[in-house]
Length: 331
Length: 273
Image (cartoon, rainbow over all chains, first blue to last red; front, side, top):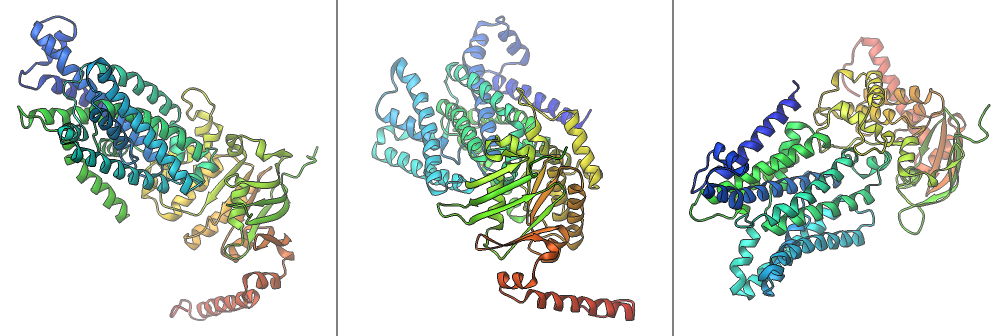
């Protein structure tokens, strides 16, 4: 058995374990057998309600969000030939946050329409921000080089975050909600999130895997990619738009969660090599499992209080980011 | 029956970055087996011309491969016919040597749902790795290779692309002498096969002359000389480069002769020159 097959089996075990832990650990402990019984629609009614109504949708949303952000990070890093690029860095999260903040402060979050409006605004905000960043980058640099795109995204991201902070300061009655949204959470989201995110993730995954070889070629930079039959500008635009849709959808349900999109792809590359046919799905499973475990930590470490999951991912992700950055500089 | 078209032809070709072209009105043809060196001082438009031919920059004038207008080809079709090897630069992601060379097959992949290299692609990549003496290194990550080895892997990838024409943009920069000589020898061997040609930019004149049988001397985006390497007037080089090129070459040769004489006399070097 080669190392990739061994790695795939270990990843599978990690995913199953993280899901079982995510569902099983809490104020009411649930054993794996009880979980499986509940999943088949049998067993204790209270446990069934807890598993199917509360913990499973939460774990599913966390897993799908981690997988989506990891896929977004992998694709962004390759499409921009930059190991430090991520949907977060390109402004998807800040844009989504601003969209959601606008809906919150306009008082449009009540009722059935409101429950859909918040993610819709987050998604639209993320997509619009990326399109704005790309339009600005194109205005500065006709060749749409990766450095211009990354810098423009970073500037827009900081600018939108500042607007959010300003709104929180000007409207103190919404400050706590905005602040919570900026840190991300999977609490009490129900099945709506997984139901929307799952098909978007599957569709984007298929489209990314179709472009796996193209992504491989793009990691060698624009000139070499062009020499190998890839139009880097057009391909980059299409890929970034897809990432914006995927990450925007994910963030719109959970709020802003950083670093997973940076950490998971790097670990996946370390374990499975740089080729996208392996590293993309591996990164998604890693990102999903990592997010479930971070969420588990977020809701249990300071129980009964809940820590924002974005804080947990940042606490683990920031040192890793520095490690990647300085390792690259040393080279 | 011989083809009525030259293998490659550009005619009144101009290209550049903005509205004003950097390369102006260049024309030449290439036959199979021919190796053309673009010579000229920095900023004269050598790299711009390569990028124009590759389709990275917008251009005007005719550009044909085997009589077919290159502009009517899709970018993948271009990739099947033209390949570009640039100067060595760092790589961010740790593909293995084999994976990197297989990427040269990208323009040949069929556009199936999840197209990936097939047995034939692997055979071609394997053949190139063996030809360039890289087979033992096939599972090594390219991030762990020396600059010279990496450039050799990228050359194998360029060959695996099985193009008709290779464009070389200062591929020997930053390489040790050994790798420079090997690179030129490998390129000469490659163009020795039927239906292949190469255009190269080399900073080192010696290396350029060792590579090329034909020279296009450029200055300010225009042709100063086009012809056989042997027919190039040294004075033309001096005018374009702004120094006494034959004088420099003579001094260089003298230094070399002193070095080799000293070696002959004493059997080894006493001190560096």
